[in-house]
Length: 159
Image (cartoon, rainbow, N blue to C red):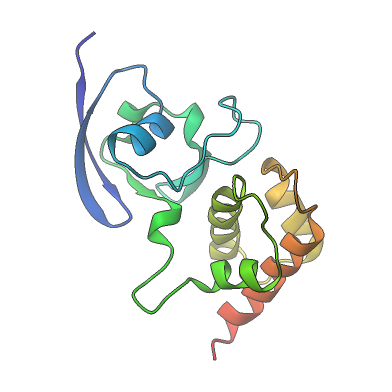
């Protein structure tokens, strides 16, 4: 098969790449563009480890073809931290020990950002519902929920 040229934006930077028509966005991010922060978990869209924002919509990148990124804006975990340091969501995950092995963490952080962008003051039920597509086998979810709640507070009232 012939490779397809794709023009897109990743974390605010214009990017062009070649990919096979059947390659997933996850494969393109990790293997072609060296964006290895996005993790492969299940490759079936069941675990959320590969979550990214595609035009501000939370998606599992293992279920999206690379060619579907044409003309889109993609946000990955690599785009979260700024020159000043970690994004408040990342910092709160650290402070609350809401991570262990790290496979699910990038997807959870990206999903949390999507949630807080849409609902800056979610209650616990909303947080748990929103993050239900992200599986974590190490921490349990209480520390993750507390980190999200604390991040929401900090983003609403920055120091």
